[in-house]
Image 1 (cartoon, one colour):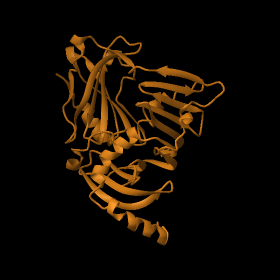
Image 2 (tube, helix red, strand yellow; image 1 turned 180 degrees about the horizontal axis):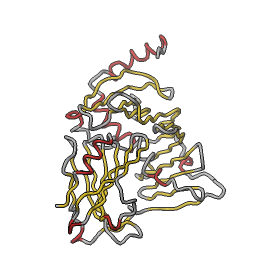
Image 3 (cartoon, helix red, strand yellow; image 1 turned 30 degrees about the vertical axis):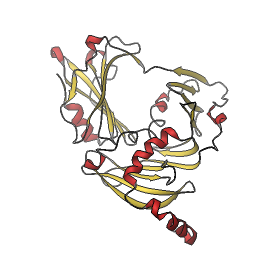
Image 4 (cartoon, helix red, strand yellow; image 1 turned 90 degrees about the vertical axis):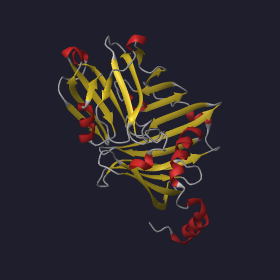
Amino acid sequence: MCLGVVLRLVVGLLAPALAWGAPPSWLADMNRAFMDLNYDGVFSYFTGQDVATLRIVHMVVDGEQRERLVHLNGAPREIIRRGNEVTRVLMPGDNLVELSRGIASGPFARAFTSPFDRVSEHYVISDLGVGRVAGRLAQGVAVMPNDSDRYGHRLWLDPEHRLLLRSELVDRHGSRLEVFQFTQIEIGDGVDPSALEPGRHEGALASVDAQSGGAEADADEARVRWRAGWVPAGFSMASSSVCYPQNRAEMVNTLMYTDGLAAFSIYVEDERHAQAKAHAAATRRGATVAVTEFVPGPLGRRAQVTLVGELPEPTVRRIARSMYHD
């Protein structure tokens, strides 16, 4: 888009700060911006199926992370974060609780909060030039994979604060799978602390969750005994745990892998106690795919493997089918 003579003059004055060579370090700065800055903005989030419009308010108050996420279309929904405590404000019958771990941690935390020391081994980082997003100058950065086992990213960051203003998750053909973009945003001291307080929604129900969602297994059971026999080059296990989900008697093995940018989670449980239908299946929402497969488990029984991640479906299926019990 041609922004006129004035914009060209402004960009010229900012050229030293926007000179290529900076964006790789900007990716690391982006992580800190998400966590450290105060900001209040309205953004749109396109998942390939629909468009949601939301407001995000984030502040650090007395060293504590505070955040409020508000749906601006559809049924009234809010998610309030205060440290590790999450409060969901939903209308009766609204089961969209995945917002707390979806949109809230998607465009913002997603994989961008990971270290970027390994990214350059499996992605090519290039300059997309300077544009405008939400009325602000924005430096564009492309982070494209070297193989077909992961997706690429087009990012636009605020040059001054390094805050992400727009992101596109794209497949190997360049087709956009998800788009996140601020339409207006206030950054810094102008953010009003009262904006963190939940709104008034007649008839809405509030639930508070300060736990991880399940009890840990006993120490002698706590070692995850499942491994992925194949993952794309560059991926390694970031965390693993064994827990008993709420209202369940059987433990579930949970593993998370990352390459420093992309990430996926694996859940393994005995087929006899799994709650899903007993057949392989796949569902997709935007770029996020969830695949269920069954693999041989201990004592001659099958195990149900559920893998959730923002990777191409063939890659996800190959990983899930490679799971084995050590």
